[in-house]
Length: 350
Image: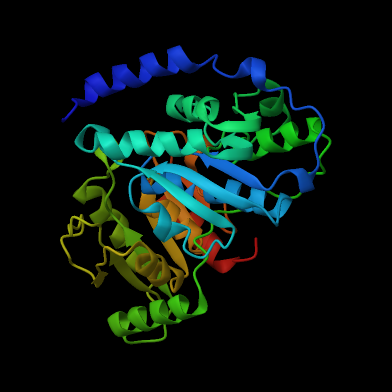
């Protein structure tokens, strides 16, 4: 059943209004200890690569707080096991089908799993997710964090609005109310947890493409909808990069559609394996892309990442790991972006 985007948007809006007050009366935490919380459910019923990667900081936070815990993830689609392959605390990944109406039995079975299993803590990872709120309500657990948008936290933390961060600030506050010691350090970065063999293979694949030991800048020229920049934009930008950084390789990572806004005019790498893509990007010194899931994949691969934003909100989706930043292309032109890149590459520890 194919649902028109406009109808789907209306559906999401209606569901948010219907579920926005779910669970508020159940958020009183009471007293608890870390030893009392062993089985945890994190719910993020979404199939998009970027959103599932943006969940990794919360998973890291939960593991750091409850190192002996077993964590189940309630998600959509099939990419989650690939992302969390090297997260040892993950016990079970409950995967709803990407298109529920095409596999209604599997969809209902996923919901039944969280109803029949007893948890010590359930965490809704996204305050804007109606299905996240519903699944938190539906799950069997003594403690439930529904994760409302907290105005007081937003005032005290300038980065609270970020999709990867606000659930962690919410969790820290919630656990404090329970009397549980919480982390007070920096919010974890996105992390694919590439192993040494994957990193080695990524370096080998990059070398086989460029056949030299120069540092490499990697571009990803695709994105969805209005987030995608034109061929003219990318051609002009590449020209500035090539002129400004003659001692660097400049290559392109291709999307699953195997298309290029640069018309395949520079060396390119193609893969449909998320971890292989991440390992390849990890061998680069800089990754540049519009706001999309592969931008977050690069960030999760620990590569300094520059996110190009023109439509979506930087405060919600900007890459924030070390030496990563976002650029508003409505404000900065090619020269301005190139100047920021030069500063970043010349001062990698800044």
